[in-house]
Length: 127
Image 1 (cartoon, rainbow, N blue to C red):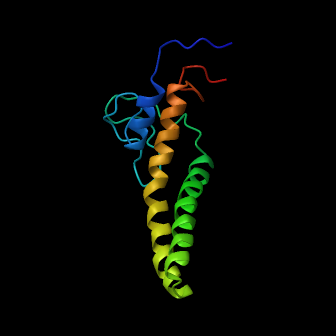
Image 2 (image 1 turned 30 degrees about the horizontal axis):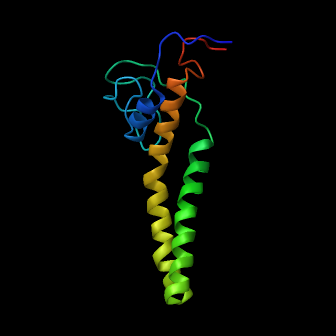
Image 3 (image 1 turned 120 degrees about the vertical axis):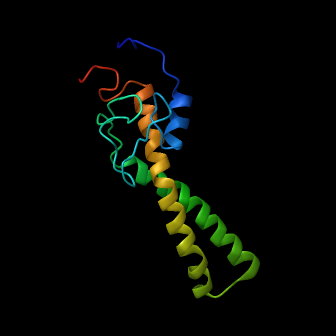
């Protein structure tokens, strides 16, 4: 059983990640580009390269976006019964924009959770 050296708030780290900020200080940027994680925090120097978000952010993004888009699509279909091209004109851009907006926020939140739970080297133990 691993003993955590310092108490870290999972909620606060996740909220910092949703804001795309450092899970520790909440000031530095997690990403240098769209979803490319910085090697270290530019404010406090926390090493961020330990993160292992991998396939989880796209999975959670698709799960969330598709639930809202399919619910909206079915509701519009039941209420208005528009032509297929109208449905596509509405929902394809909504899907694209919402997925692109949500992906870095979810990835930041997952990095925050990893930091708070001292996973993947964030706790000093690299095993």
